[in-house]
Image (cartoon, rainbow, N blue to C red; front, side, top):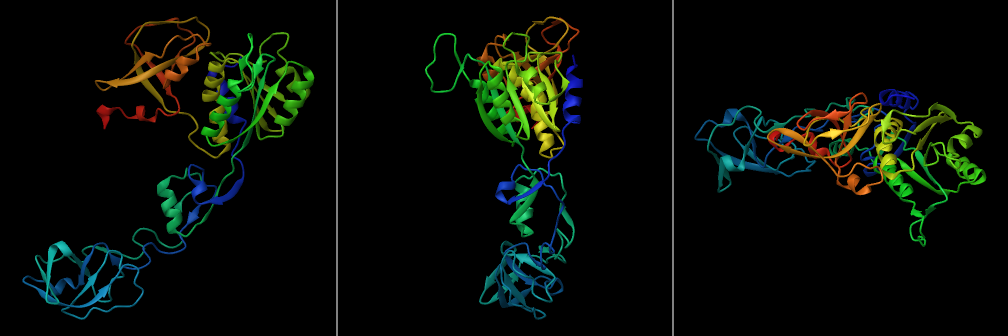
Length: 408
């Protein structure tokens, strides 16, 4: 049996970033840049005004200065305009600076009357001017490979004229549920049957972290059905199965995967829920065999599968931040396994408080709906007192807990 930390190391150590593909600039949002992006030109491309106002020479502006307005430069103008000594040129924000000008006076610091501008105060040299290459120089690396592309990176890519962006490609992840008791959504539900929620939840989790889910449906409890579905699943870049990994008579997953050449890396993890989790490799592609319990399968996905998929997509930070929070009730557990307690984090008085999100039985799905974090309770301990600090991992959509209201 692998410890939880060993399992994490083994998973991450056996996956690597995929190759590159080119996508449209908007499609690159949230993806990982595969190559350095360099600037093809200076930004700004020319000296220009940072304000709507008047371009002039600072030495001409000792109060009370009144200068004739001899020209006008609009934003986007390409016509060359020269400034005569002792004169001013009206200029808009972004307009190219006239030759000879060395300062800009904003409209609010001047008054215009009868074709002249009267200055309220003397401007400083280079006042309100953006100089060529001030932001970026031609040939400079503006976004290094490995960067996760956000809106600011989109702005820089667009400023450098990149309509197409090289990013790390997304893996196709096959998702397979197993069991005769399963029915798909919309099919009649009889006593003893359950809806195949794992297929949907795992596919949603795959999609949420940026990979491409491929739903394989349900493998029935026969060797032939398992063999057919898993053969198809191993054609993807990664395979996730749920259920059929324990020691029951119909738990065929590990046996069939061995027949299909999957090399096991570990077959159990000292975590609860999620102990009977298996991980293997098929020609280098990761294969994750998760428990059938919906709660356990999502926790294992969060802690082991998601980091691997992020790593395959080129992310460098693949684990969610570990925070500290104070338990708001006494907790007891069995020894021998690291326990993941579903909790609801709140903040008060400069501290993070961890409340149980509900009944911790792994068959209770509503507790997962109410949880925004997982508290990690060490394997060797059996009791935890109210007020004790424990480690917590945030769940998807709980990023606001990184900064508490008292810290903003």
